[in-house]
Each structure stands twice: as C-alpha cells, then as structure tokens.
Image (tube, rainbow, N blue to C red; front, side):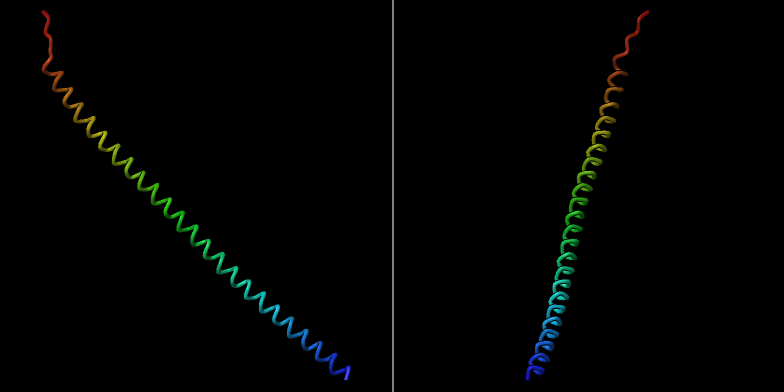
Length: 90
C-alpha cells in the first residue's frame, strides 16, 4: 500500500512539474507580447517626433524661401530708388 502511495506522490510531482513548465511558457509568451507591444509603441512615438521635426523643418525652409523672395523684391526696389537719385557734379 505504501508503494502505491509513493507512486502516486511521484506521479503527482510529475504533473506539478508539467504545470509549472506550462505556466513558465505562458509567462514567456505574455512577456514576448508585452515587449513587442512596447517596441511598436516606441516606434510609433519616434515616427511622430520625426514627422513633427520634418514639419518644422519644412516650415523653416518655406519661411526662409519667403524671406529670400522678400529681400530680393526689396533689393530690386532699392536699386530702382538708387537709379533715380543720381547726383552729377561738374
């Protein structure tokens, strides 16, 4: 009788070990999903910041182009004014 109880105890220990391995596998899978989710979230945030910086860069380039055009137009106006103010001394 003690032999059968000892055998049952050993079998139960084997079942417990299998359950523990299953739990470990499940935890590993959950951790992998968790890590993948967070990696994707970080990538999304980085994309957003890159897009925002690209937008600000585009705006700066656009503003610089407008400034150049304004300076050119002001420069041509100045040149015209200079042409009209010629002093001739004899």
